Image (cartoon, rainbow, N blue to C red; front, side):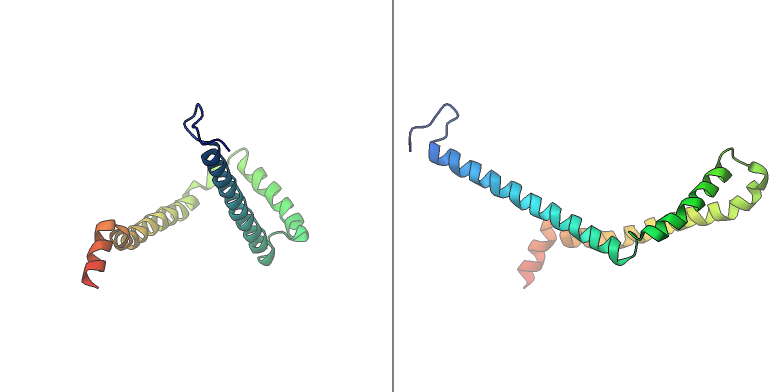
Length: 121
């Protein structure tokens, strides 16, 4: 093996090490992605989401929903107000809860906070 740097500034040994590290990284990424995909399929199977009979039963419901959507019928718009207000209220409440929960986590995740915790231990 040559110990003289090539045009890229790396020796053959260094280049081999870099390529081996890149291969390990790609392999590790492929294993992680594969693991996540397997976990997703298992979750879908356990929750019966991949049940063909159940999916076939839902197809007519999609047709009914589309027929009610196109063309839109605005004669019952008064009945839509309460569900829309409920939807907005749920989204605001969810956002508020997320903010309240994220602020303490943000302080715990900050490096300066971790230094203070380590200093007190």
